[in-house]
Length: 138
Image (tube, rainbow, N blue to C red; front, side, top):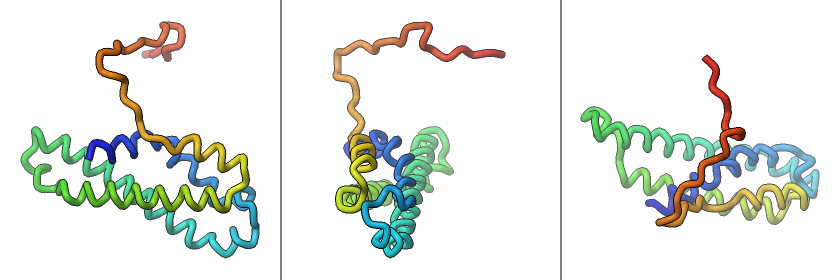
C-alpha cells in the first residue's frame, strides 16, 4: 500500500495538469480529439473521483486512531482496490498522452508522471533559507 501512496503523492502536479487533455491544441489530431473527447472526459472524471475517494479514506483512516465512529468507515481492502484502479487509470492516461498529444504537452505531462521520493534515511532535512520562506502576517 505504501508504494501506491507514493505513486499518488508523487503525481499531484500530474493530476492538476491533466485538464490539458480536454483542449484540442494538446492533441496531434483534431479529428481524433473530437471523437475521443467524451471518453477522455469520462476517464479523467473517474480518475479524479478515485483520487478524491482515496484522499477521503486516508483522512478517515487517520481519524480512526482517535475516533471509534470513523473506524467503521474505512475498509483497507477498498483502499487497496482504489490504489490499483488509480494506478491502472494513470497507465491508460500515460498511453493516451504518448499516442495522441503534441510533443510539448507530452514532455510536460510525462515529466510529472513520477513517484514521490522520500528523503534517504540518515539525511537531515534541509531548511529553506529564511528569505525564501513565506511571510505570515496577522
